[in-house]
Image (cartoon, rainbow, N blue to C red):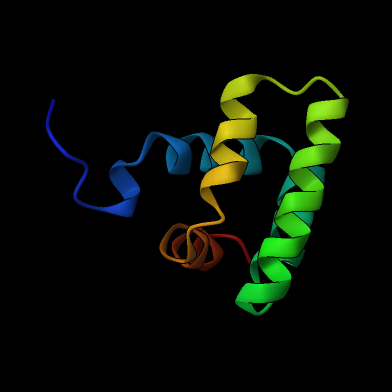
Length: 82
Protein backbone atom coordinates (compact mmCIF):
# COMPACT_ATOMS: atom_id res chain seq x y z
CA UNK A 1 0.00 0.00 0.00
CA UNK A 2 1.40 3.36 -1.03
CA UNK A 3 1.77 5.87 1.83
CA UNK A 4 -0.28 9.03 1.60
CA UNK A 5 2.03 11.94 0.87
CA UNK A 6 -0.35 14.88 0.96
CA UNK A 7 -3.40 15.90 2.91
CA UNK A 8 -5.50 15.94 -0.28
CA UNK A 9 -4.81 12.22 -0.78
CA UNK A 10 -6.19 11.45 2.65
CA UNK A 11 -9.56 9.66 2.47
CA UNK A 12 -10.79 11.55 5.51
CA UNK A 13 -10.03 14.87 3.87
CA UNK A 14 -11.96 13.87 0.75
CA UNK A 15 -14.91 12.69 2.86
CA UNK A 16 -15.00 15.94 4.81
CA UNK A 17 -14.82 18.04 1.66
CA UNK A 18 -17.69 16.12 0.11
CA UNK A 19 -19.89 16.36 3.20
CA UNK A 20 -19.08 20.05 3.69
CA UNK A 21 -20.06 20.78 0.09
CA UNK A 22 -23.31 18.82 0.34
CA UNK A 23 -24.46 19.92 3.79
CA UNK A 24 -24.53 23.64 4.66
CA UNK A 25 -25.04 22.95 8.39
CA UNK A 26 -21.93 20.77 8.54
CA UNK A 27 -20.01 23.33 6.47
CA UNK A 28 -20.96 26.11 8.88
CA UNK A 29 -20.10 24.03 11.95
CA UNK A 30 -16.74 22.97 10.54
CA UNK A 31 -15.92 26.52 9.44
CA UNK A 32 -16.53 27.81 12.94
CA UNK A 33 -14.36 25.10 14.47
CA UNK A 34 -11.54 25.05 11.94
CA UNK A 35 -10.78 28.75 12.25
CA UNK A 36 -10.15 28.49 16.00
CA UNK A 37 -6.67 28.29 17.57
CA UNK A 38 -5.45 24.66 17.80
CA UNK A 39 -6.28 24.10 21.48
CA UNK A 40 -9.85 25.38 21.11
CA UNK A 41 -10.29 23.58 17.79
CA UNK A 42 -9.33 20.25 19.35
CA UNK A 43 -11.67 20.77 22.28
CA UNK A 44 -14.56 21.69 19.97
CA UNK A 45 -13.79 18.74 17.68
CA UNK A 46 -13.84 16.31 20.60
CA UNK A 47 -17.24 17.67 21.62
CA UNK A 48 -18.50 17.40 18.03
CA UNK A 49 -17.23 13.82 17.75
CA UNK A 50 -19.12 12.82 20.90
CA UNK A 51 -22.26 14.57 19.61
CA UNK A 52 -22.27 12.94 16.19
CA UNK A 53 -21.55 9.51 17.66
CA UNK A 54 -24.59 9.89 19.92
CA UNK A 55 -26.68 10.87 16.89
CA UNK A 56 -25.58 7.73 15.04
CA UNK A 57 -23.40 9.34 12.39
CA UNK A 58 -21.75 6.92 9.93
CA UNK A 59 -18.43 5.54 11.17
CA UNK A 60 -16.52 6.92 8.17
CA UNK A 61 -17.75 10.44 8.91
CA UNK A 62 -16.85 10.14 12.60
CA UNK A 63 -13.41 8.90 11.55
CA UNK A 64 -13.03 11.80 9.12
CA UNK A 65 -13.92 14.36 11.80
CA UNK A 66 -11.43 12.65 14.10
CA UNK A 67 -8.71 13.28 11.48
CA UNK A 68 -9.23 17.02 12.02
CA UNK A 69 -7.47 16.63 15.35
CA UNK A 70 -4.35 16.57 13.17
CA UNK A 71 -3.31 20.21 12.74
CA UNK A 72 -2.12 19.71 9.15
CA UNK A 73 -5.44 18.22 8.04
CA UNK A 74 -7.45 20.87 9.90
CA UNK A 75 -5.43 23.73 8.46
CA UNK A 76 -5.69 22.38 4.93
CA UNK A 77 -9.46 21.91 5.15
CA UNK A 78 -9.83 25.41 6.65
CA UNK A 79 -8.35 26.77 3.40
CA UNK A 80 -11.32 25.33 1.50
CA UNK A 81 -14.10 26.18 3.93
CA UNK A 82 -14.62 29.94 4.34
